[in-house]
Length: 253
Image (cartoon, rainbow, N blue to C red):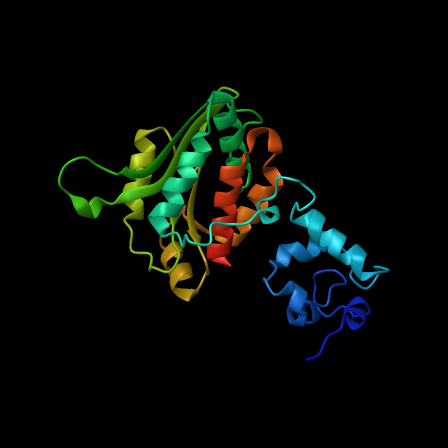
């Protein structure tokens, strides 16, 4: 299917997502990274846009590219192809920041990039602890596993958190129930905490696994970084953190 900008702009709606021709968008090279279905509701009507530049501006606004500190405005580390543990430990390191105020703003932005639990996320955090590769129990039982990222935060008089298992290519064979028990020891459950598996694809095997493991849900790396970049602001960002995010973005693309 050959699609030009002109034909894309005049495309007729063929999907329930407003006036956007999903097939045309998928075929046009500029949209090579696949967009989530919810994206179409934010992009507006393609065929009503007067110029291709207006369309590009809408995409820029949706992904937060108007922010000067967006990670796509810098270059990643071309020599680094991070493994799962490097990714999670790196994220935990940069979430810590260089001081208490920076840490609270960065953790707040990270949590806001996730769908909120039942109690919602606080507007401002008062404390935050970030664990990477947190052991689920002491002793010699290696099979108990380690939580990739565990965040415990407080704000507005309540405790909230996130328990994250990060995957690039490996199968999900982790003891998720043990992770839940570890979170419970820290005062976290499905009412105030998100239990997420970060992955590249929500394939059939992943869906079957998570169907048996409530309250765990899937979240794509791409969605996390798209939403995180919209939350980040330059006053609590820096070049190293931005370069690391770009490196991870390249890794998942």
